[in-house]
Amino acid sequence: MALELVGVAGLFKVGNQLFTAEGPGAVAKLASLGVEVFLDLKYHDIPNTVAKAVAAAAALPNVRLLTLHASGGTAMMRAASEALAGMKNRPALLGVTILTSLDAAALRELHMPGALSSRAVALARLAKKAALDGVVSSAREVPAIRRACGRDFLILVPGVRPATAAANDQSRVATPAEAIRAGADYLVVGRPITAAANPRLSALAIIDEMKSAVRSRRS
Image (tube, rainbow, N blue to C red; front, side):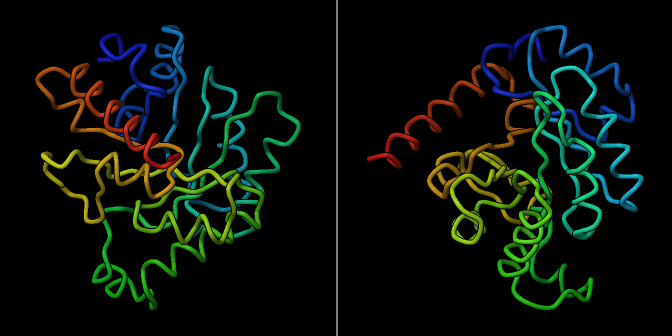
């Protein structure tokens, strides 16, 4: 799959499934292809544990983005940021706000009051306060997070699906064009590419849609 997409995908995501099965070797194997890695392990633990995990992850080859749950709190996020202080060419740290598989009903079930969008923005503010480089959010929250946290704050949008693709287990999805127009810096596209009959052609079509949206955003 990676060989098919070298030169097309901007980053290759290594998530919990692959990392659990193959460990750091999966990152090293991708790095050997000359590609960069989005290590999406969503750390959430006590500050000391997360700090050490982040430092270990950052030492892996070609890792450019790391994730942790913003709901772990300011102390945990700050410890993670401090673990990378002074590291040359360190990866960017992104705090996960609200998973795109969750909706308002799911938050109520978890006894998390308030509107979903306002909760995502509050978590983004905490992430910025803790010196993280950005956050992960659905496209719906991007404009509000951008207003709250500024132009230089990175926003990565998962749950991206072309209009013809199934939502699967995602609740808050967006097309590539919608995510770009909302102001996203990075898009995560999984199954619409990995499950396609021709992953490379599917990825190229998505990139064309992204480029068109970038042009319209600048005009």
